[in-house]
Image (cartoon, rainbow, N blue to C red):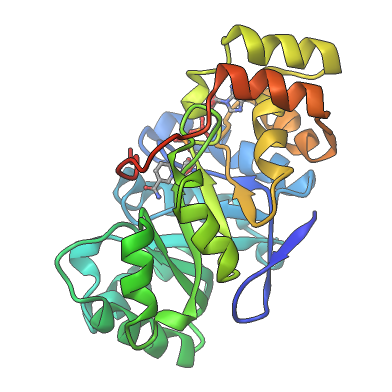
Length: 277
Ligand code: NAP
């Protein structure tokens, strides 16, 4: 899998697997873990989860999927803002590690801005790093002003990634956040890269897909992955979807495809508030 370089110099895969909505229904857990294992088999080693998803259930599904193959995976998890205090974040991380059945998380993110001062959260993250419990840390749902504030805060230079809502139908980040991230070498991790499947029926996307002999989801992922500094984390439980998504790394879009997509999904013409789920 192609990788990107993060500010600290370590690399991160450009395509991975999401886990939101996993771990909520015990009857679905085996299917969900199987999907993640299939993704790993196909090179999708980055797995994105959070203590929030299924209130720990998704992290348990990840542990099930990684049984016997932990070393193949790159785990991203997230702390709730209300657990982001200096000590609280360390306790939350310990709980995540227990649910994940591992002794380290490769990338640990603040899920969104909350009331805790960033300096405290970063201090907690640094302590976790020093203890070897996380390898890198970052943020999620931060707009450009949040990133400016983070960078001006002690520990802010350690922010390795910003995970935000970004896909063809949600291009607001292109106005100022994405240029800022590129300028500072901070990869942007695109969540809901398929707009939760809601945009896959759009005629322009279907037309480009049919011209290139691929699926609309693959076009949506290839559109993100062709850009510098972007990571995408589609979530899929269906084996067919996992296979399609893994194969999207090999899909190339031509200039005429991009023109069709730009007409259907216009780039931003002004600053807009950061979109979030
Ligand atoms: P998504 O990945 O855009 O879409 C997931 C939906 O698309 C599922 O219904 C899935 O179906 C379907 N799908 C997957 N691959 C497909 C394909 N090739 N063709 C057609 N349909 C396909 O949405 P998401 O789950 O919101 O976002 C991805 C991940 O980002 C999450 O799981 C989570 O890890 C992360 N996330 C983070 C935040 C945050 O605040 N930081 C917020 C939202 C999401 P099946 O599952 O049935 O296969």
